[in-house]
Amino acid sequence: MSLAAQSKILLPLYIYPHPGAWEPLYTAGPGTPPWWPNADYVREIARLNALSNVTTLGYVRATYCKRPHGDICEDIKVYAARGREDEKMRVEGVFVDETVNLYDERVKRYLDGVDERVRCELPCTEKGKGMVIHNPGTAVNAGLAKPGPDITVVVETSYQHFVTKDYQEWLATSPYDRSRAAYMVHSVPEHEVEGLTRALKKRAEYLFVTSATTGFYEKFGPSWVRFVQVMAEP
Image 1 (cartoon, rainbow, N blue to C red):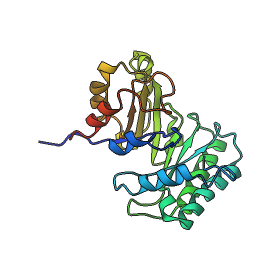
Image 2: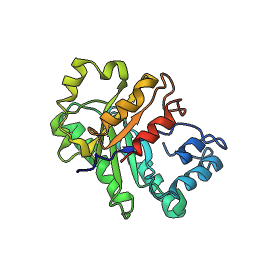
Image 3: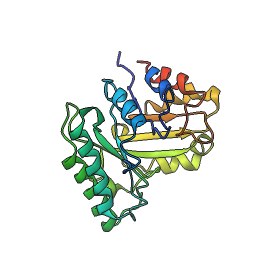
Image 4: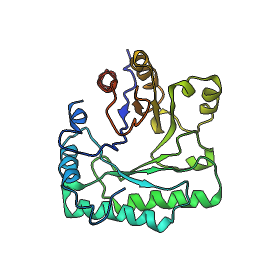
């Protein structure tokens, strides 16, 4: 009997780490001076990095490939420098938000350059070179997948939209197989969270499923515990 595909949680952690605010996580942009160093983030990132089953990623915004490439590279350098200064502050990759899904030579060079910078700046770990995740939030043209990042968020949408025939037909055009895909689905009816999560584990390596309808990356929604429990199932 073959084992079911095991997926991992992709959690966009936009919740400010007031004492205790990240506690549900433990149980289940880099910033600049004077904002950083920030004692709250220093405390909580260290806790995350102490966990063997967590891969901590830095966040950068590409602004649909309109942000100056040098600015993104500078953000990546900042993350790398912090990890060198304090091992507890290391990141093992970068989540590149607001990428694009349509191919042209300029954006391909832009995105490949970002990926190369991550892999050059971030040290090799036992998990390999720095991980790169792109978030266009939709299926991408095949040209962007050669070679492309490690993982692409090909779904970032509401449950109501996700289950439509048109959306599923569009998603079928994605060039990525399960091992390189991430799905993020919000506004899921609470009674559907468990079943949807089990179904999506067969389709994507990384998942985030929530019943929250607003601020879904800024709080742990009421479905968080059930989602984590299903993700832990063999």
